[in-house]
Amino acid sequence: RPRILSGMQPTDSSLHLGNYLGALTQWVALQEDYDALYCVVDLHALTVNPDPAALRERTRATAAQYLAGGVDPARSALFVQSHVPEHAELAWLLSCQTGFGEASRMTQFKDKSAKQGTEGTTVGLFTYPVLMAADILAYDANLVPVGEDQRQHLELTRNLAERLNARFGAGTAVVPDAHIVGSTAKIQDLQNPTAKMSKSNAGGKGVIWLLEDPKKAAKAVRSAVTDADDSYAVYFDREAKPGISNLLTIYSAVTGRAVEDIAAEYDGRGYGYLKVDLADAVVAFLEPFQERAQTYLGDPAQLDKVLDDGAERAREIAAGVRARIFDRFGLLPRG
Ligand code: ATP
Ligand code: MG
Image (tube, rainbow, N blue to C red; front, side, top):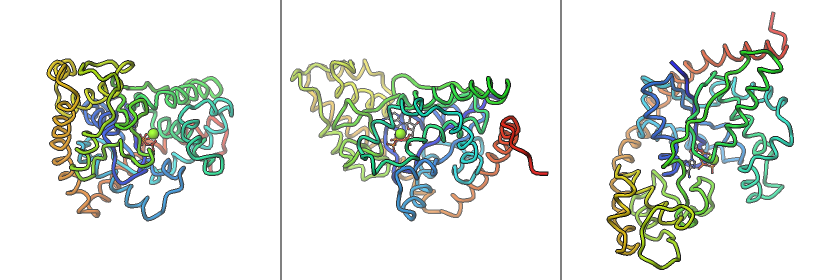
């Protein structure tokens, strides 16, 4: 079976709706037909220097949300990135194959480093896409389900894989494809619908957190910024109506109804009706999700067991790939 690998950062204890719709729902669907590996990428989270106790708590919480979202550990390997040392080892080899200019072109680095300033920006944040490439190449993954925001990083991974094959011989690395689902691929910030909903959005007023009080999420929806064309027209057009289009996308995703259907229902009635009903739909989605997450968060020993099993399965694969790539690079094997 073809293999897929994906992960999310434990940047916060809660994932947000963009992570859920852009990533988690795809993971759940794909685990049926693929040999799936899903990790909590704690090494990536280190790029912003988190508090150690918070990081530990967030790593478990992120894993609990994978499970609550439907990742099935009987089918998929669910693990923590730092439990498999091959990620960091391969990242070094790949960083020595990545051009400085090439890495400098990553738009996510430009966005995040601009927010943090030169002194607050770590070298780790700069080399983040290289570690992501290592995550993927360490498993010979064929497909990587990600949101639209990760397209450029995946392109870098593909380039690196092709470079390895050219320099060290065919078969050194598997060139992965991106799996990006169109309509829900990008959820925007409710307060700023031209920017993506993100864990690192300071303040987070425009973010729907999966583990927050559903009442707060409902309020965030009701106070979403809508488009200032002051008409009652409700239709999907990300250019002309970014705010409304984002609300329609979310509405469709949490209810399973078609966007056109929803647009037709609210067209001409004013934005307020759309927001109030969407707020209810979001609450109806969050409540059962949180109940499921709580069952895993309430039993950390069981959760750690799941993560341990997952790391075991992941390591079996990664150790073999590491041996192959180290050898191709000319690193001397231990006698
Ligand atoms: P950060 O701001 O710390 O980068 P993030 O919100 O981007 O956090 P990640 O852990 O980087 O979250 O990404 C996890 C997954 O969620 C990735 O597959 C990414 O493509 C997806 N994702 C993140 N934000 C969105 C979004 N707004 N819409 C759709 N998918 C998203
Ligand atoms: Mg991100």
